[in-house]
Length: 225
Image 1 (cartoon, rainbow, N blue to C red):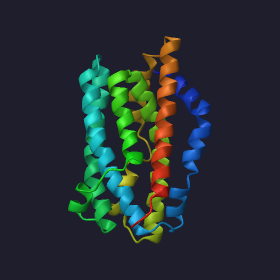
Image 2: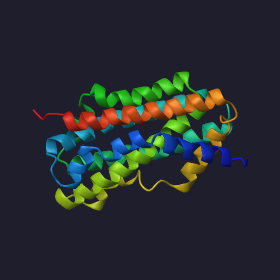
Image 3: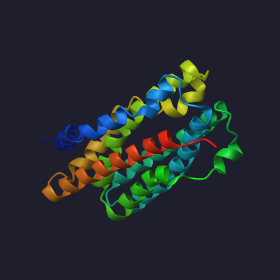
């Protein structure tokens, strides 16, 4: 197989095998409710608060991945994601402001365990996993996350009066750029030669989706005071 073909084929198999949990996330009631304009502002603000803690954790995770990666192409890929996280954090403040949430309120908010567990899991991958595990988990999760963000963005603009500039945080995850897939495939292909490595990458991606589902369940179950 070509340099990237083995990685691409493996990711396609992951999507197929993990389709049941992917469907649960894509059919989750929280983004559906936002699409219909049925979510109160307090819950949307909670969503923004938890994203602040997740993105802040993602910054540190990427730094960890860069430090522990042994190959330059792996380091280069994770380094390229840092700029995306920087933009995401900047745009998150715009989203929070449009939802009536001040910068101080956002930065001093408390993380919820049901939301923080997601970024904590990716810290665990950085410490105990391989770049192949990390890349597999990122791409499989990123796809469903991006789709749900697109739907939330649509709902916010349709029912809550937000503008395009307000939803840049959500819109930045979808569609996924071709160069993102190229970087992922190049990393993953290096870990497809051994069955044990493929098994570990599948487990990593599966757990990432379950932590993603936990995040959405937390958003849905949150009760405003």
